[in-house]
Length: 95
Length: 95
Length: 95
Length: 95
Image (cartoon, rainbow over all chains, first blue to last red; front, side, top):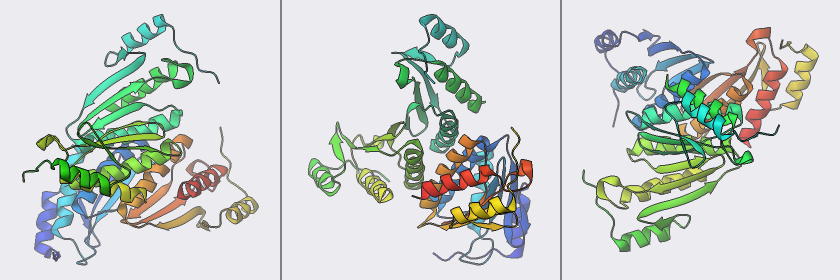
């Protein structure tokens, strides 16, 4: 299956639909802050499950209670529908 | 450090202080049900962090959205203060 | 998709193909022992990823360095091809 | 307990003792590449356990099979003995 990058109109619509995310340098990004490392890592474990299930993985970093996520689709060189779907799953994990 | 088993009076006091837990066959037990496997495993990752930090680990099992935990202190052949502390940390993870 | 239980002949063939596993009370079972809790939990995190990806989850328990896994397919009341596939993935994780 | 930053001589000795790590902009750094996301995340789960046990956490990022770790001690504004200890534990996880 070939993944297509979204058009700039489609990315704008996606961003409007995902208010906690922003588009930065061609990636769909969200920064999160938790109570402590335990809460951050419990979240990361759940994101790992979602990502592996989709076969689509985030670029992400963590320092103690902070997690930064950047979603892009390397195969197509831009933001694809897969990134929108993973962002939605991450939002659902956050409840 | 030698860990002492709690007296039956101390275990009764502990159980009274931890209403979600019950004492079954010399173990402090709690059964949990989550929305799905993801939520259950995110919780398990956090319990793993707490347990490893304490150097005191649960007997636990998981089937999809269910997690069963039994706490006992093998070194002393019964419930010790460590089990009470781990139970309290687990309760705090559950919020 | 309906999952069918394997015939007893197919289960025998599966068990022959998976020498580290045994069939106990209608479940495909394996017991593992690791160096410590850290190694056991690192393994469990990887099994969690495999299981969630398949949408097929183990019955499993852990006590410190020991992990016990029992695979069965609740929807069909027996061992199915999904259990064989998850067992193979677990064997690959173990290297 | 106050954590002291290591002197430049002590950092040089630490780096000599940890050949897989390099000192970059005042942080002790290591880049790792695994077979896939599963292997990378299994490793991360084990590092999380070690970090939480020490009460000392890494700055780290992951993209599929790659994990980048930077160790520094925020409380003292530099590399401390805690970073050396966490680096050693990470090396032991890698076997």
